[in-house]
Amino acid sequence: MFFFHRFQIFRENTFDFQGINENQLKIFQKATKNLYLKSVCNRLIAISKIQNAKEQNIQFDIKEVWNLLYLSISNLPDGSIISSVGSQGFLSIPLYRYLKDMAEFEFIRLHIWDDSLNQHISTDNRKKFSIHSHAFHARSWILAGSILNERYSVNTTSHKKENSLFEIKYNKTVRKVNKHTSNAVNTKTNVEIKKISKEQYFPFSSYEINAGDYHKSRTLSEDGLSASIFSFTAKDGNVPKSFVVGPSEIENSKINRKTQIDPTYLLEKLDSKINNLGASQRLMILDWMRKVHQLEYAHRYESIKWSNRHLWIGYPAFIISLLIAFSFRFPWDTITHDFGIHWYTNHGFYIAFLTSFVALFTGYQTFVRPNEKAVVHKNTGQHHEKVRHQLEYILTSELDKKTRNKKLELIRKEWESIDSINVSYKKFKEGKDMVKSFKKYPEELGFIKDRIK
Picture 1 (spheres, helix red, strand yellow):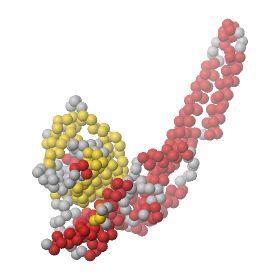
Picture 2 (picture 1 turned 180 degrees about the horizontal axis):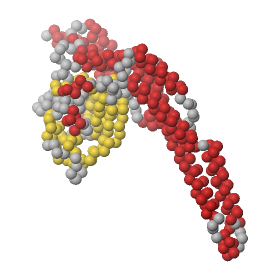
Picture 3 (picture 1 turned 180 degrees about the vertical axis):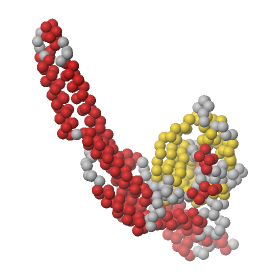
Picture 4 (picture 1 turned 90 degrees about the vertical axis):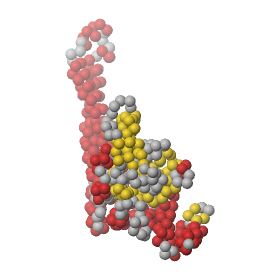
């Protein structure tokens, strides 16, 4: 009875007509001694920040949200945390679920990838049934590590193929937060699959998957540990069913689903990884990566431009030289005898005219040297790519502060030592637009505090 009285006070003091009152929630959280209510307070504040970021299409403060979620989970008594490992091999911890109105359905989970989870699944089945779709629009925010997301086009066909669509059949606990058992049942629908894209994402970035679209994702972190907040939202799009792609010869396959795994170890490991690298420094590294990535593409585009120009100049010069050589065997005397001597039938005119073009093209090749510029820009682009990979390593590795700062300083010096050959504004903009289209980097100069408040 006392608990319900406290819960009534909690409701009256933490919600207003606009929704959650964050300040009141924080006051109540500090005052109450009930572990469940403390957990609810921290969870509501974190979910509110995630939902606000989604609605405004902005990035939330990963460290702040994670610390709230970590407290909301770790403060719960043993055995009270719901967690399971699904067929894709990551640990899933439900954070929030709204089911009152299916048009407004929303489900938010914490996903954790780690090599230690492989013991709970069949890695062979994970490979066979990795490409899948979702019934609801999905969005993933990377908390730690690195995630590789691959997108696929999956088209049905009447011809016999290696792959078919499988429908996931759940047991009678379908309305529970974590379904305990499920089976992949072959629908006998043959499909052709084709990879559309391969994208790598880092902390402070996010990606979306439309309802019904096919994808698969996995960790790319060197230590195997990655984590994300994954949200399903009906109001952003939904389809009647979701499917998994699997081998046609299989009729039915029980989905690996290890339930009630104690997540304490992984939560502590993840907390150490997230809090080891400060938010501002992580943003700064990503800002460096964006600039390096832009220059990498800009130089590659410049290399292609100059390589093409070398060909456009070289081939005509070669062809004209052949024409000049051939012209000495051309029957100029016959043309002159039949039509009279005119400037356009004079061999000397053609020799002078064509030779001037050869001289022009050859002079351009000699003084402008487009082929050399193409090689220089190509090498510079490759050097920038090397620097980018070094930054990716720092982002995805558990390094102590001293080692990380030392590596960053070495990278900074290497970046500064790259020959500063200019690229055209057009090619730089093309490189910048290409990198922007990846949607994997935060706002420019986002590591400056007054820009991320």
